[in-house]
Image (cartoon, rainbow, N blue to C red; front, side, top):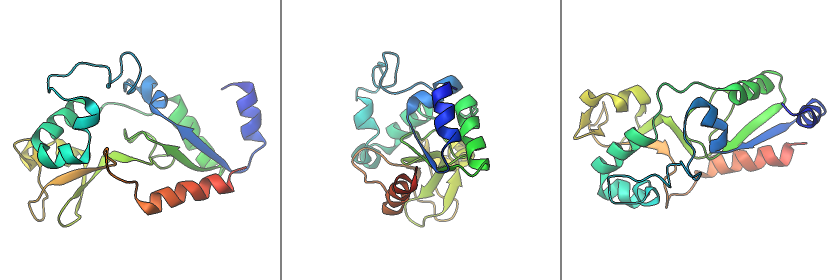
Length: 183
């Protein structure tokens, strides 16, 4: 860690971390916008990622959404890297109020919050039943690649904010509260 950053953290009591996809690249998760990122990679679907990861696309083409999602946004073998571990240590020390990030890979969950949700959490769109990542990845729980709720049999949606969806009010409020308390 840069000595100036270390000094700032050492002299602070309430820290908020702002991070993006670059934090997880050391965990072998590609970012979105670099030359080799997801948004610049060619895909076989005929739609750009911004469309495929939107609410309307999810609702209209759920099977294609899940095929793309599972192949391009799920990294089950990824492990937290030095940055994630350092943030967890700051949390243990009581200095880290929270993490504000658009990452959805689940690696920040040990230390804070992923503003746009996490691939590790999934919810039935009908009854709200929660399902973990292993559940949605298990084809035995899917119909044509789409995970179905163990309780009511309806479609399960990743607990992530898709394009054309709003952040949940309580999540946004929590981030604003952390920012206002930070020193």
